[in-house]
Length: 75
Image (tube, rainbow, N blue to C red; front, side, top):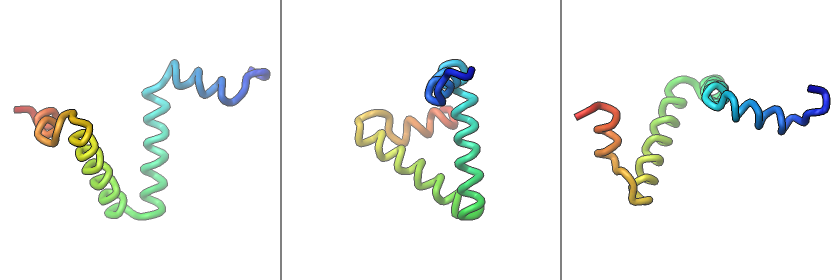
């Protein structure tokens, strides 16, 4: 492992354990947001991100809020 660069190690990690790596990064992000802003402000940021995501999907012509609602909560 001595000759490998950090980028090679990260690439191998993402190739072999993409879900775990993304989970760790998301957990770190949420923890930092909670420490910096507190619980309710972090929840507000998450809601704003979700609203932006839904608006972006509508703008792209993909599934709108109704399809997202059906996917999350069934029929």
